[in-house]
Structure formats: C-alpha cells, structure tokens
Image 1 (tube, rainbow, N blue to C red):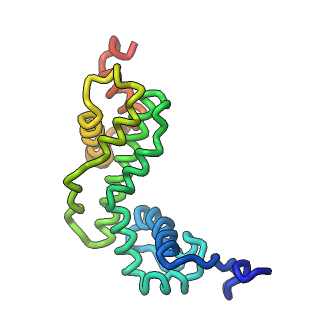
Image 2 (tube, helix red, strand yellow):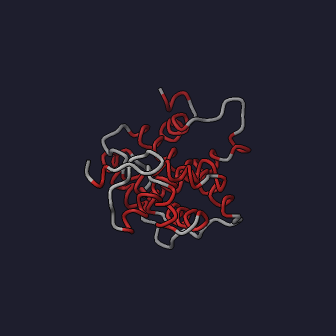
Image 3 (tube, rainbow, N blue to C red):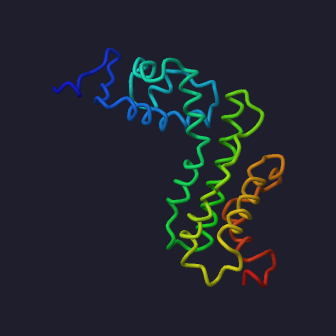
Length: 198
C-alpha cells in the first residue's frame, strides 16, 4: 500500500498530497453546495465528508470553520461561478432548452445568494461587477439562433435574469402550480398566445 493509499485514523482513505492552494480549492468546491443548501449550520465533519478528507485537513487548510465558510462564500459570490455554468450550456441544444438552462442557473444563483447571505448574517448582496461578461458567453450560446432573435444576447440575458430572479422568490412564484423553467422558456420563445406557440 502506497503512502497515498494509507487509511486515516477514522478508517477513511487519506487524500493524496496536494499543494495547499489546490487542496483549498478542492475543499471550497465541495463545501459551496453544502453552504447553499444548509447555511451556516453545516458542521466541520459534514464539510470534511463532502470533500472526502479528514476533519484535520479542513482545519490545516483554513484554520477554523468560520474562515472556511467566509472563503466558500467569497468564491460563490464570484461571478465566474455563474459564468462557468453558462459556459456548460451546449450551443447546439434547442433554443427553449438553452433558455430553460439559463433560467435554472440564475434561479439557483439567487436562492444560493440569499442562503449564503443569511449564513454570513449579511443583508445586502455583494455588488455586481461593473463589467458583466455573461453577455459574451450568452452570445456564444445563442449564436446558432442569431437569425431568429429580435434582441441582442445582452438584452436577452438581462430579460431572462429578470424572469428567473423574480420566479425564484417563493412569495412571487407561490401559486397553485409554480412556473417551471421549461414553461417560462416556452413563454419567452413563443409568447402567451395560442397562435404564437402553434
């Protein structure tokens, strides 16, 4: 058994040696979904399990739980986190499917921001970057549909963000049957009349 295959005291397999910055990035990527889902109530044990490492490794990398939560929140608030989601959309997907995926990404973003802000005891969201590069990514996503579109990718992004954010708020989308991302995408593409969707 090699040193990287040794078992830790608790019986879990030791994580292979990584440079500190890579180790920290790996831990943050594992902790962010937990932070979004559960807020500050997550334990260091849950964080370690999510990352597949021992609790001691978490503390060696970040010092304490609060420092890790702050670092995870900072990475989550980074606009690149959303941009990577948008980059994952296949431009060859059908237009409605792409719009539904964008709505899902923006909805998840708002819900996550609200939960992370609550975990940090913050009342104001982080400022949006002066340069919003999501329009450039959306231009690539919607390039195959360019001749069909009446708005620029930047305007489409802004409109979808408005729809997605408002529909992510339970008090606004709290009806007998809340709108799904697929329904909203269909309305965005075809409108609300029967003739438009025929």
